[in-house]
Amino acid sequence: MLQSVRIIEIEGIGPGPFAAMTLADLGAEVITIHRAAAPEARAAQPANPLDRGKRSITLDLKDAEDLKVAKALIASADGLIEGMRPGVMERLGLGPDEMRALNPKLVYGRMTGWGQTGPRAKLAGHDLNYIGLSGALWYGSLPGQPPMTPATLVGDIGGGALYLVIGMLAGLMRAKDTGRGTVVDAAIVDGSAHMMNLLMSMSSVGGTVTERGQSRLDGAHWSRSYRCADGGYIAVQALEAKFYAIFLDKLGLSDDEEFLQQTNKALWPHLSSRLEAIFAERPRDHWAQLFHGLDACVAPVLPPAESANDPHMAERNVWHGEGEVLQAAAAPRFDGATPVTPAAPPQRGADSDAIRKELGL
Image 1 (spheres, rainbow, N blue to C red):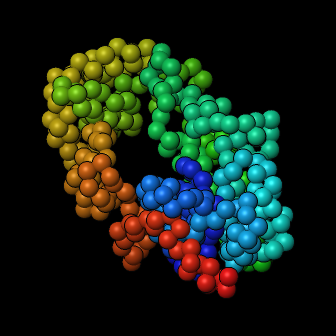
Image 2 (cartoon, rainbow, N blue to C red; image 1 turned 90 degrees about the horizontal axis):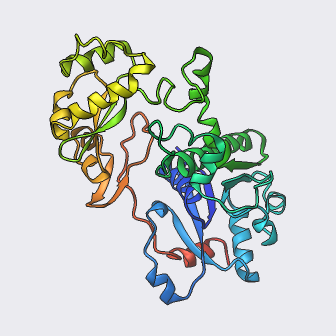
């Protein structure tokens, strides 16, 4: 889809490399500028799976000659991705003003936690801090418990990397139409707040309230995970009445007067306790089989290694690799195109000589 697009990525961590990987998965040529290091240090660093499908050149951006190479690369590109703290790229002489003067059509993607402006812009932070401030962490646990630390999906990836990809794609479309680039200020605190709009849209009809455990998707017995007899877990989210009815039927609870009061918030804690006891009686796979093929909105909670062997995931060829070392195929999918097996990531600097030659340097 993006075979004619060249993206330069300044080596970073987390959401920046993930965004660049996603663009590479979509067909863009992505060249990562990795930090220069001594040969023995490079040998000790394994290839990063997030570098799959990319090319790699090692440069010391504080070295005048290497800086020329970086500028030549950026001048040849459609987009740039960087994840430094605000002001660092400017100090290197690679800020948006300098690079867009060199390359007017450049889409300059900036990935940070707090954004380029605001009182916290230059402060350190991590995923949990950003989604804590944005409101995205508020409903992240069972009622009465502190919000748990989620995987980096909500902040770094959802609110950060994927919003940067959206911004880059929009900027590339604009540049194609007008010949003028733009600066994309992708902040995790912005993106994770934006993702809350679905929940916030339910507030007008009482579906979302500030008190934790009292919203439509927060605290209900039919919207949580349960521990099973073997220590596994089952995920239940039988939201609509017709699906809830199937859920109750398979558990033999269709005539239970308490369970029939699906939306009675006063009963939610009690009914959750009852379901805890029920699911604790049998192993996870028993419950998965019981609800298999039904619209009860019940599914097993699987670690990635088990997910790879699930019939649905296997047929769609989602996971690649062996054991704990797995990668997921590119997403989304496109009509007429089969998702390819993820390309092996390059060793750091593997393409340095070839890229310099292409640039005539």
